Image (cartoon, rainbow, N blue to C red; front, side):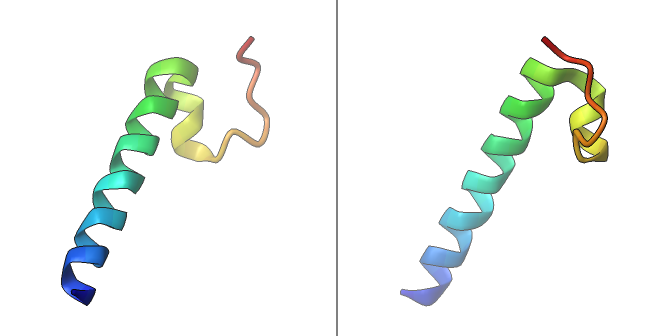
Length: 38
């Protein structure tokens, strides 16, 4: 269903966001535009 797809996309975006924060730190919350992560 459309609702199921929406929920799955939302959860996938959350997981991606958490993964970025875990690997890149706080700068990922601000777009990683000037990120100095290695």
